[in-house]
Length: 117
Image (cartoon, rainbow, N blue to C red; front, top):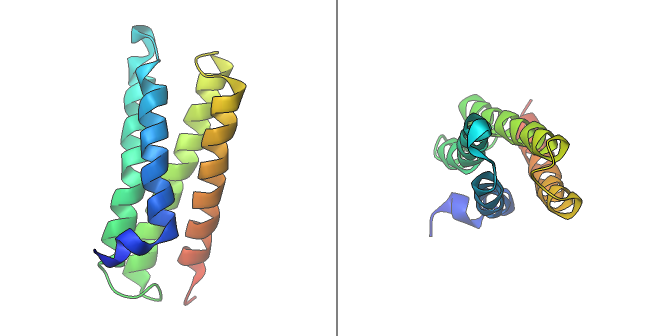
């Protein structure tokens, strides 16, 4: 097992990737760009966490940069989930579940980007 696979933030990000994929499947064709953006942003989170962990310790500037990118992608996902809710493509329960995961991910990534400052 790789080191990043042991991180709670990585496991949460992978869980959210599955949630995001299920939400994106329900978006109608006219909004396929929104579904694609959700898929890309959701995939960016665990990928950047993995890449950041390979750059050294959390105190390293380059590692923190990748965690900051992952955090930005998670925030983008939250905005897309809000848009899907506003368009009534996802239920309140689905929005709540997705947002709970994203809040947890963003919180952990925020701490990871501040370590070593």
